[in-house]
Length: 258
Image 1 (tube, one colour):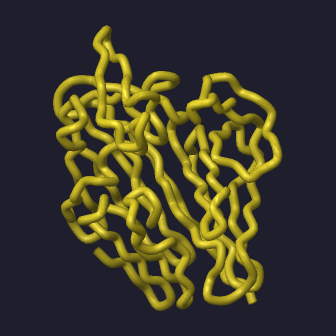
Image 2 (cartoon, one colour):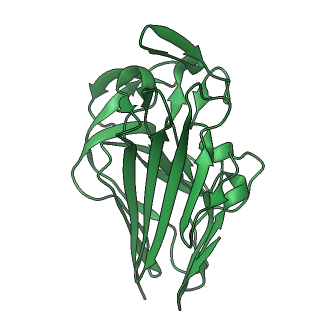
Image 3 (cartoon, helix red, strand yellow):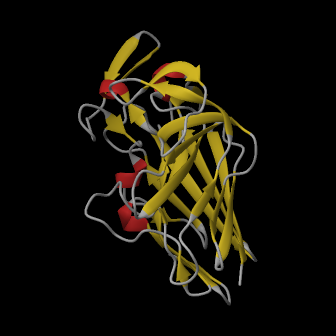
């Protein structure tokens, strides 16, 4: 699936988890391209949960559910980033939540390319029982574009989830330490921004209540809006019913420099 205008081309790989596989602006590629591990490239949707899920387990209405350990000893980033998506109109795609998820449901994505912005929408729908869920996006932005200086991240949050020894949030919130980070944050003071000086400025806009920043890699920066924290199905789940889907939006807004 492709979206394009005079200066921007967006490629969405439906066979690889419905992810944005390329975002090329003014001949500059912003997204890390195909990698061996499906979790390490593109900008992919996370649903019906986002981030790590401790031990791949969660409870719902008195029952315990065990999911496959996609990143042992945990499950991670939902199911739909590994599903094949189907196109549903010019800029919409749909995927089943998959056989590993114990409830019948589907995810829907919408992509809207405007002048200076790419607007994303993700929905989780139930096709039967109510179930807990969270959603988000995992973009991998390159640190270096084809021109300009290396990426600079502007990110300010009021608090961070304490990370346990198993790399899962404990639920306790602490002061934000110096980076680099692989952590979940709340209470943002401003819109996150990545700037490649002399080339492009990118604002990451979402009403998401939680954000994960992973800026430890030398080649990439990940800034991930999420409706709940990692392990959210146990810590802070939303509820999806046939009448009430879970919906998130994520806007990438840019301006050229130089």
